[in-house]
Image (cartoon, rainbow, N blue to C red; front, side):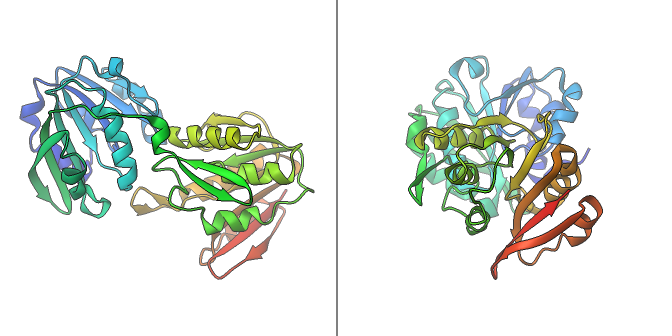
Length: 337
């Protein structure tokens, strides 16, 4: 089993965890929780992915807790937190404030992460609640340890950021795509929406809900389904809909994993990164599987960076396709069955 550099740092101290009741949270990218010996282990996830969905049967002795937020009840029987720092510093702060508001005073806290993600800032961010020390660093990763001295105060609504775009209110939590600003690629895709769009629409990777509310503004009679594999995105999209008095179905789904009907139109601004690594599998799967989820004469419309070319894969899976809008940075593909 290959472990991430972050997990390798944890393993160097595996002897101290044998008598611990461990609660894992954060950006966990491997199966360390099932390999690390402990009295009791729980794994908190807020992102659905193939890795854990397919390997759940390996984790029978580990409780997997899937939710955006952690509760006091969920952690009441654990005395150790191992937190994997994500690539977004604002997301780390959001998650840790929630976690440290639930754990008991005296809980042992371990934080591990990559330098490029800003894990060094943990000492400053958490200094009011934990005095943490660096245990070790290797290959651009750092492991910190400390003991919880004071609980944080966590209020969910305080973490929402609001963007205003053409009289629409876009609500977004840390770690959700579009948190810092409304993406230019999303704006370009939204500029192609018109009153001519109708029927059932699927928004893959809905994030803050920006694309769906833009579409509903132009085509209020459309029936929109929004999906994302990240719980914070689901909550953000729901808040965006409420803020604009619009209605749509919002589902947790890892691409098409929780989708069972067909649509007239599928829209997406797909990511081309998986954590810190470039990964084109998401957009390729959206294209390849898209035809199965489109009605007769259905359409797939998505935006990508101008430097990427998907002509070959589109030609293999759709009757015809073209680029309907383009800038120096982005282009919008339209593919038809």
